[in-house]
Length: 318
Image 1 (cartoon, one colour):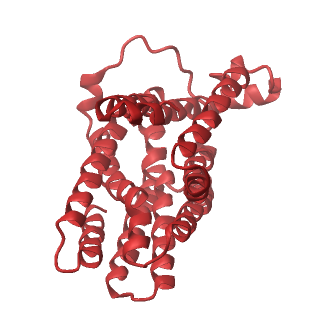
Image 2 (tube, rainbow, N blue to C red; image 1 turned 90 degrees about the vertical axis):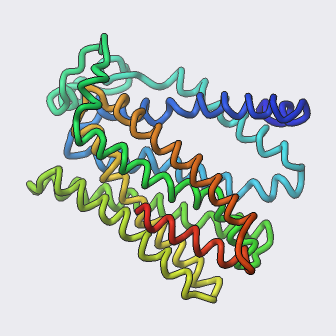
């Protein structure tokens, strides 16, 4: 909500406000992982994580769907005021309704508390984080590298997809916002479908490690395939369809990469996600900036050729 005010005061103030917003957002995903590790047993982990994270996709849908209309009718500050107000409302609701663990929640039955306690590890408060031990483990570094590669593509598509629709597919602002919604809707649906598949496989005795590898392979190879098809497509409908399929497969990572933090270190699930997500955010910074540079200094047909280069780079990362 402070962004429109900061923008009037100058670029340095705006950058500080944006940095503070990033600091605030940075704790959300580790906190969610930590909560789920306390609340959810192993055989329901993928579904629960996919359901929670699909909220982020639906948030992207909401922003992309309503922002163009808000800008058109009330100018750009209305976007920040509207979503800032919703965030403030949610904060007070969360403080009133949420509990850190099942034992602290007065709204669930004794039977449910017993079930969760039986299926979850006992988690005493963490006095000290063993950073050296965590960083010495190969699976931790695998998560970090995987998160970097995943977010490199996801951040670029989230940031530049409307530009691609405008410059390459020649959609107007409203159309770009509407068509940008569809891939995120497919992610929300695919994440929950993938979570159901993963939990079913685990319940049927398939190794958790093999399930995570399978889901993450789908989450990488699926988007890579569909993004490579964009260089052979001339129809806007087919291009949007490829983006929808690409993002849909990307959501299978919720049952691979994102669930794996709780598998390899349930006691430190939030810490592990904080580590890997730091690499993921850096990938987003690098990818978004590099994309802007390519589009500004493109080849003879920058709006077309440069986007094909960007999609190829994303596929290489996957």
